[in-house]
Length: 278
Image (cartoon, rainbow, N blue to C red; front, side, top):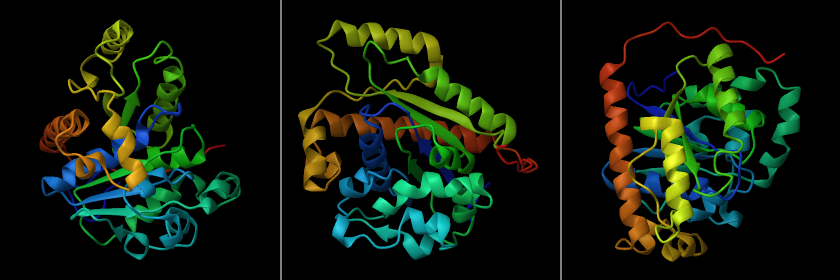
């Protein structure tokens, strides 16, 4: 699946465990890419709507968003709104999305609602980030089917790898039945505390498990990163010089290098046959 822009890449930021920096990574990585001239779209597919808040869109100001995109036949252009960051747009989330999981059960083409919606885009984006809910539900499944790759934020704590089996099994199932080209773009270690020996130990385990899929850049535990959402700003706007901002700029550079490598080696393939979950 491709958007009209032939080089557009769609990346789902996913981890079924909450509180690992998934939304923070989505918002700040998107901001960093927009800052270097990329045209970026964030799809806030989490009913909590934190990505929308972090990009400065207040709840009272949100109109049609991800729910209407998936269920009302609207196009990306109908629902994407500009943020305060040039080149960065967001499709907001609302409370209506909380009921989407139940509604999807009886909806036609329930696994492809997001893919179909993104296919209706007529604008050019270089990259689309989908901020997934912290669960492996039908909304997350929609995001995985719509995406070229996934990014996994992982906090280096004792239970970091617990639950990864379920996520990786889901990815393999999506590859087998819906989206054979789905790849793991990378695993990013978040909330990293270099003063804590446990962070180093867990990081070694994660790198041993995922190999070169783990980014060299780690996102440090940084109070400025935590403060920024309360001001409706990505940390790169809130405090460009803090360690968190520098880390997200470095991460953006790594992601772009990997994406350039993928695009340089891509060959035309027949589109996968669509299936439905039984």
